Length: 108
Image (cartoon, rainbow, N blue to C red; front, side):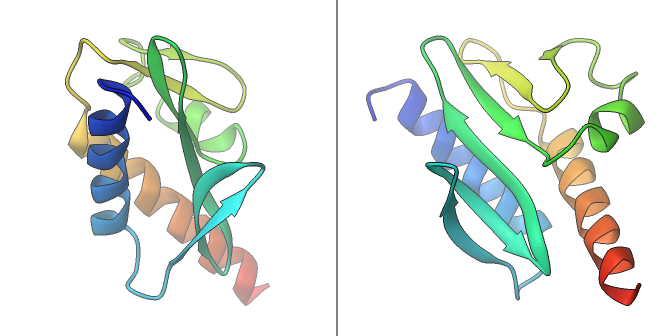
C-alpha cells in the first residue's frame, strides 16, 4: 500500500487494536483487514483519497451521528480523508460500542 494510505491504515489498526479486547483476532473479511470479537467487530480499508472504517452495520454510525458530522458517512462506512488526523477518541468509542453490541448478542 503506498503512502499516505499505508501510514493511515497503520494508525487506524493501532487505534482499533488498543480499543478492542485482547481476545479480538485479526482476519481478512470481504478482502479487507478486520477485527473479530465474538463475531465481526470492524473492518477497515484504504481507497484513492481516504481510509474507511466499516463498523459492520449502520447502528454505530447512527449512534455517533453528531460526532461524525465532520466526516463523510454512508449506511455502513465512515470515511477519513488522508489530509486530516484520525479522530482517536471517536474511533475508540465506536470500537467499544461495537464490542458491547457483540457481547450483548453473545449473551442472547
